[in-house]
Length: 331
Ligand code: ACO
Image (cartoon, rainbow, N blue to C red; front, side, top):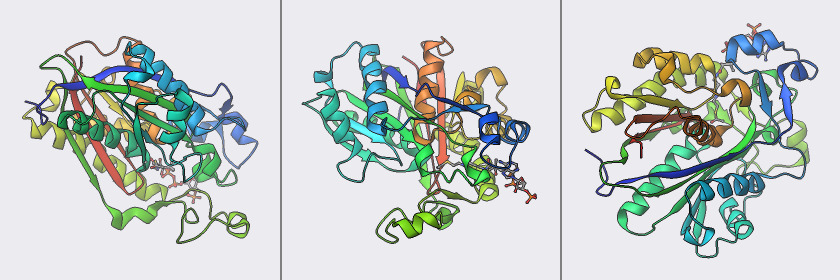
């Protein structure tokens, strides 16, 4: 019942979070907001913020090392590195190239995949498809972000929402009958400007003057993105389940993108999933964009919440606007 010919799954995971924690109370001192408002409207209590000198590739490397060890592999076993990020160290070289050099993964190819919060799901689907085609054996997939450096810390509608971190996993063949079963993915570029960093490319080169106007920071139409998210998150899971003739009743566990507790609760409600089947670590980390599902998956696995044979759904949404989901039978 899999969309792919081979049985391909995740054989190891890892994460890295900076140890510098910024609480809602700390943010109260920066902008006109309150701990109570942030908790009530988002569910977020605190987030990890990378200190100066620590970059996206550094966090990606730490998460990758943990995932490689967890899978029982060595760096020489990795033949492709995909880094999902919207906050690369720099435009070129790709973060994957920086990670490859820092890891010493000399046999690996690699590239960055840039679709914001949906990036980890898109990267997993890419990895599975590469392995299915026979091109690669072990693909290292990383979601890593330093959102704190693209936020306007004077804009209370965005700066409260995000955090920094990295999560990684190794995608490989698994015993027959386990692994990835189905996926769904899509974009709606027509609504894309609801979530943008205007001066971040060649259409509007980031200059000091534009930075002073706030154009080099994330701009978001929160209510529009919210409506899109609650409509999309449950729907993409149902689309993926439909393709393999499963229903929500077959799901043992759901790992949603961690953007806002109200969005997660609404998706769970639409899917009629009880709270104990839905993983939430948003209060500790905020929205870590492409790293969010990767970190959540690592924590869910290492706290024993996912067991072999469980049917697990993962779903993300974000800038683009974009969305994606995966259904797996856990190995
Ligand atoms: N503290 C206090 N008040 C605030 C804050 C704040 N931090 N932020 C906004 N407000 C105020 C607004 O100014 C507004 O006041 P007004 O009524 O006097 O004008 C009021 O609160 C309500 O504002 P809304 O924007 O309508 O608040 P909402 O309930 O929609 O919550 C939020 C805002 C949390 C941003 C919500 O819209 C949301 O979560 N949106 C989706 C965000 C998301 O998931 N983004 C994904 C991005 S991922 C990626 O790809 C990068």
